[in-house]
Figure (cartoon, rainbow, N blue to C red):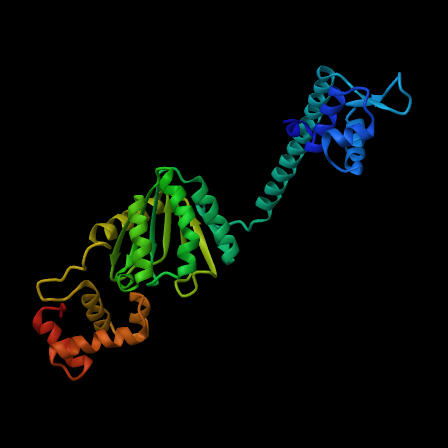
Length: 329
């Protein structure tokens, strides 16, 4: 009962035993408390340090317990002093933290454009994203290219996603159509949907992007190496354009829970995109990267399309696509 006031169970039992039998000595305390003699002696040392026992004026060499009303006042006063000391240490820590934050802000490289902050390296990017997700209040909008998401990344995201959705934050994410073929990503998306998140897919995405509260956006500097660096954008005009881009792609995206639609010519969005990319001269490697699939998958889809067209070369396939209206000449 008195552990909150700084007494362990043995010291409390010894103190109670001394109150119950003021004339008893160490032997009586050992018998009453039921612990080894050394533990009783250690408890007496603790009680003496706390001023809960003092030498007896009547019996030389013995200790007597102070009355509970005085003893509890002593314990509470001691605890109050510890709380004051802890509060002082906390205030000192806050002052040090504020100074460190100010010094760190001074060391950050200045950017040439207002509303643009450079984020160098994966650690700085993660720190920024942690701050943004901690402070978000209404909405998170994101593009997630790259195809199937790593299992470790999705497992690490679950607690944070659950926390945000539990706070009532609206979360909308656009993935690539290729994630429909990855069971782990589909399960994660279904879990998100069950928690209130919204997920849609499109054949291609322009870049990886996270927008929070329509006020800040994080975009990688290079789509080839998203961990190398990023920019934090806060300019009103820039955010207005990025939010409009997101809303435009979101409107044309398909809910992950449903089947990918096919056009009147029997092509799904992924196939239509591959035809357009081939016509633009993209290689299998470039197409695979944009779609978030392997090069083998990209070549297989292209080969299937050529077979459906009855074409023996990609040039002939392009001509036949134009003839069928699959591609604008």
